[in-house]
Length: 169
Image 1 (cartoon, one colour):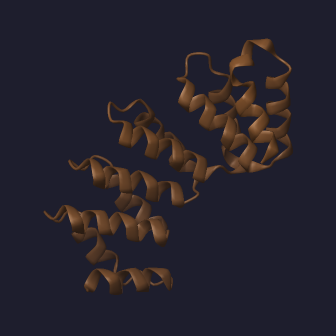
Image 2: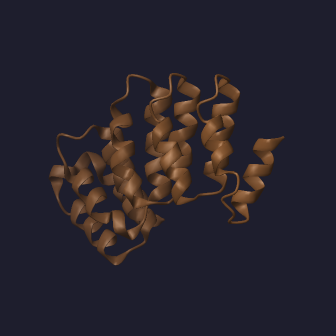
């Protein structure tokens, strides 16, 4: 199909299929929109992120879930703030996708966000745990220091198991 050809071109670093993908991102077919989101998850491009961000408000939950997952596969720390609102979604499908996407992004550039979130007493527990896991996933010395500080503070006792697991990664 034309979508698969566009996907192959994108994986080869050629943007010749972007116009088709953008057009299909607005297709009436839920299947076509999900396919576009999945293609951008497999082959990240800056232009693709723009199309994905435009798809975040799709009417179909499955499309939105795929978009969130694909943004996670971008490994682009700039996407974390765009994914954060989905952590409070009324739909567990979107909340879970957002947690996994943020974990997938885990990069040293994201450490300030993950630190702030892990230590924020107002943040919901799943988000704090995801941030703790993401800190461990970065493997950065700064992240390890944050996790060790959490373990040394009884205020974060509830999160100690997550911090211990994150340090083990």
